[in-house]
Image 1 (cartoon, helix red, strand yellow):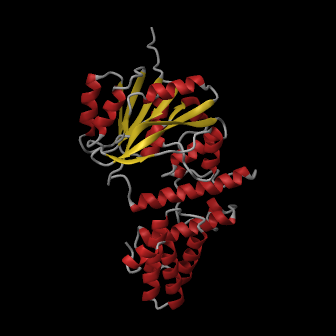
Image 2 (cartoon, one colour):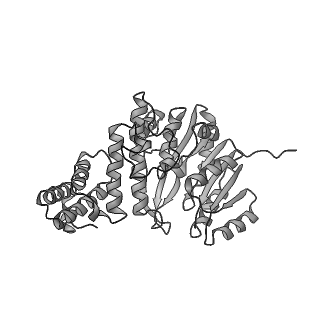
Image 3 (cartoon, rainbow, N blue to C red):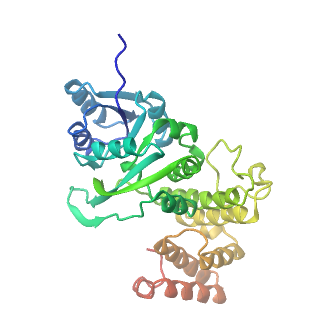
Length: 358
């Protein structure tokens, strides 16, 4: 007799997560809803993660360990979708804590609302030691508000709190490497064109903030993917073709109007690549000295438009870089423009750092 499939498959990728993985798994194993399998996807960890997973799997047969060489988050998530045996997928990260009633609350909501393909919850933010920092999310909940926010690049469904119908995730194409860093926003946006996405007001997860999460490189890539999705949504909502159709690799920032991938792309999309190429050179490769002065001026003008890179802090960092480089080149006009932009963005920070990068 064939074993009955579980109601929920938990997809939990982990890479070098020995510090928090046991707490994360225990928060799943102690759910008041018990009919699930836990797919722990070890993406090539080189610390003690595998040993912890094996020990816990020996104690609870609901854990299935999927191990492989490191290949990144997106492919790990898609592997989890492929291997899942349940009709419902619950996402979980290796450093967060799910509340005991999370699964029962979300599963019941999906059962009561068959027209909803995804439900998310609110989350409380904790520090590296697990202490609450007093900040819980309080986002809009209705499917209409969620869909509208997604088309503007606002990822309302908090990824580690999501529970969704596997069939809808697969029908929308799963996670796409092209939108690395914002693969969840991309998938939720495509799902919103097929089904309804809704939120719960309940706080059902502790989201851990710690130093190992974010690098400058990942921030730039995440923001680029987010802005790219906004422009693609704009094209699709206007009834035009998806300009990313046919892309099968993570976009390179140095693609330009002459690149095959952007040959027929709208002008604002081509401009986005130019801006992020410059940002990448300045923030991650320390290559500002090799950039043309007109490129620095163009980037500053782009930052003023507020049409990309929403982080005010990073926009000011860029202005400080441009200020110092313009001073070095004795470009008085550009220096003054960059200083004025930094002052307008945050005067106290500009003066505190003396218009120098921070």
